[in-house]
Image (cartoon, rainbow, N blue to C red; front, top):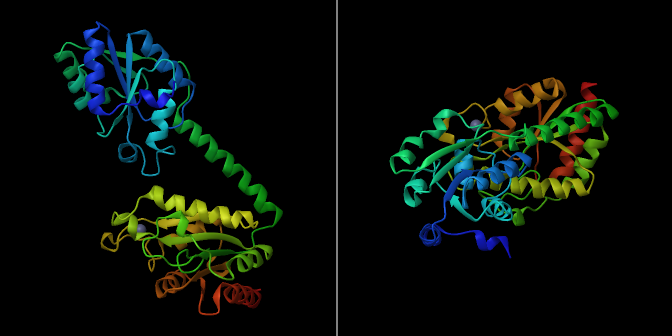
Amino acid sequence: MDPGAKILSLEQMDQWVASEKAAGRRIGFTCGSFDLLHAGHVQYLAAARDLCDRLIVAVNSDASVGRYKNPLRPIVPERERMYVIAGLAAVDAVTVLEDDRPLPLLLRWKPDLYIKGGDYQADELRSGDDVRAYGGKVEVIRPGFDTSSSKVIERIGALSAHTEPEAASAEAARGLVLLDRDGTLIRNVPFLHDPAKVELLPGVIDGLLKLQAAGLRLAIITNQQGIGLGYYTVQDFIAVNQRLLRELGARGIRISKIYFCPHSLAEQCSCRKPATGMVIRAMREFGASPEETFVVGDSDDDMQAGADAGCQTVRVGEKGFWASAVKILSLRQSVD
Ligand SMILES: [Zn+2]
């Protein structure tokens, strides 16, 4: 059976719940984001199923995970998270949870049991009174494994942090290049959010290889006002970057970090270029002085952010990125 058959719309679930109840079955309900499925999830859902005859799992939508956890989450999109959950034997039906809290769904289906994992905070169980009011019962299951999606992600983050010094020590840090993205590395597409539209500009590959070979570290600093204006999401932005990093990586080019400002102009943040926030932060995190930091871009804002932070600036003009790379190396020699 295709697990997808267990994924039901709210209306389909209405019918399913009604028929299961009519057959005298005890319905359990639980919810969660289930971003990276781990042993704790599997143990928890199996234990939840032991308490009832039929288990419904409401999986938090991408939007709700972004709201209550972190705008960079989830890692796995909702359709895929629902599919994975539906593949578990313990789970009988899966639906999406658009709200931050499950109360509307609980009141809609009035399951016999509202089941939660024990690592939730008490205030998140405030639906409990409403469940008891319609005659349902709240069950809390203690976690059997000391793990979570966040811990898995933390571990992956720690791994990448640990490989970084290794790469850097092979070629002692001798400067930092902070690159604008749109109009500098890739063709400028207004409010770019489609990875298929990523197009490297002429000279970028050769120029970046030249800078990297000279021992300079590369990072991107980019204004992404489209996020703040709601034209596209952080996830869209990341997908575009993934495409860019893949194309550069295939040529042996390593971008160490991507700094981005998600704010709109109206928010008056300290990171949006021409403000210096991203440049200063990058220099601090890379341990680079302004003298050994080069800001490269195609706009006045790029140039101003770099100059105001005390860095050297190079504007990518009609001669393209290769000429800028040559310019950076000549500027650096004059510093030495
Ligand atoms: Zn900002």
